Structure formats: C-alpha cells, structure tokens
Length: 257
Image (cartoon, rainbow, N blue to C red; front, side, top):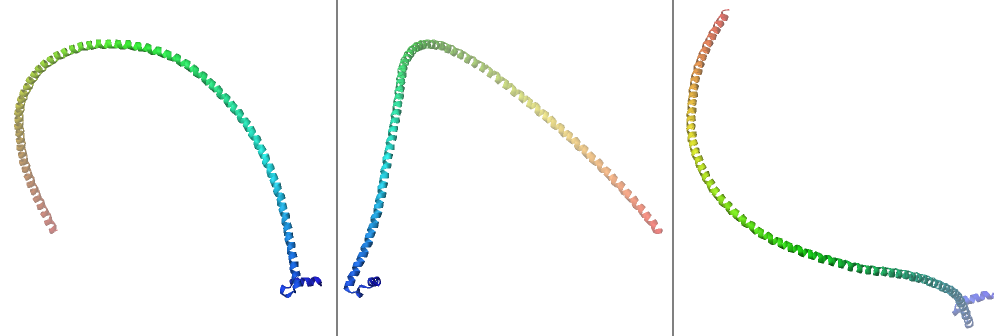
C-alpha cells in the first residue's frame, strides 16, 4: 500500500501535492537523476579505461613495430653500406688498374709516335729531295721541248705557206679547167637541144600524118559500114515484104476454107 501511494505521489503533479511531499518528490527525482548520472559516469569511465587500455596496447605495439622496423632498417642500411663500400673499393681498384693501363698505353704511344715522327720526317725530307730533282729535270725537259716546239712550228709554218701556194696554183688551174668544161658542156647542151627540137618537130609531123591516115581509114570504114547497113535494111525490108505477102496468102486460103 505504501509503495502504491509513493508511486502515485511521484506521478502526481507538483500543484496537487503539499509542500513537504513536493520537496520529497524533488529529492527523489534528484537522487534518481544523480544515480543515473553516476551510472553513466561509471560506464563512461569503464569505456574510457577500456579505450585507454586499448590505446596503451596499440601504442606499445606501434612502438615495438617502429623499434623493430628501425632495427631492420639499420641492419639493411648497414648491409647496404657494406656492399656499397665493397663495390666502391672494387670500382676504385678497377679504375686504378684502367688508369695504370692507360698510362702505360700513353707512354707506349708517345714512344711510337716519336719513332714514327722521325721516320716520317726522314721520309718527307727524302721525298722533298726527290721531288726537287724531278722538278729540275721536268723544267729542263720543258725548256728543251719548248725549243724543239719552236723549231717544229717554224717548219710547219714554212710547209703551210708552201702548201697554200701550191693549193692556190692548183685551184686556179682547176678553176680554169672547170670553166672550159662548163663552156663545152653548155655548147653541147645547146647542140643537143637543137637536135631534140628537130626530132620533136619530125615526131610531131609523123604523129600528125599517122593521125590523118587513121582519120581517113575511119571515114572509109564508116562509109563501108553505112553502105552495109543500108544493104542490110533493104534486105530486111524485102524479107518483111515477102513475109507479109506470104501471110496474106495464108490468110486468104483460111477464109476460103
């Protein structure tokens, strides 16, 4: 009965309760709210503690992982540094060997170049002397050839003048002969033309005579043919008259029958 009354009292509105009951109601509500808040705070503390524990574990795990990673990187860096130092030593040794070999080749090349230079210098001097001797000989030969060429040119000019004189004389003589031959040919052509003209006149006269004879023969033939045609026409007329007479006789006999 008390609990029901308390519940009703809690459910009643503040205006319906006396002052003492109202205060108790407020204290009860405050207590309940405080308990809820304490429960919420306790629950929140538990969650925070759980999160702090999880965070501490994660931080520790991360720290351990970072430590292991750092140790691994330091080990790898140490190995890499050792390998690089070894490679650098090998490369340095190879470079040193190559430089030594190159220096030796340079020394050998200098020696060879010096020897080759001396040989080439001697060869050039020898060739220069030979070339100078050859040029002197060529100059001497050219002078001799020039003198010989002048002599040959003089002879050639003399022969050319003689040949021109001979050609001029022969040309004049040949021209005279050709003029005489042309004159003779022209005279022969005139004579031949006169003969051809006479022959042409005689030939034309002969042709006219032959044509006249053909005309006369043609006239005679025409006259003979005309006479023969007249005789033939007369004979045909006679034959026709005889046939007509015979037909008339035959027609008369048929009428009598």
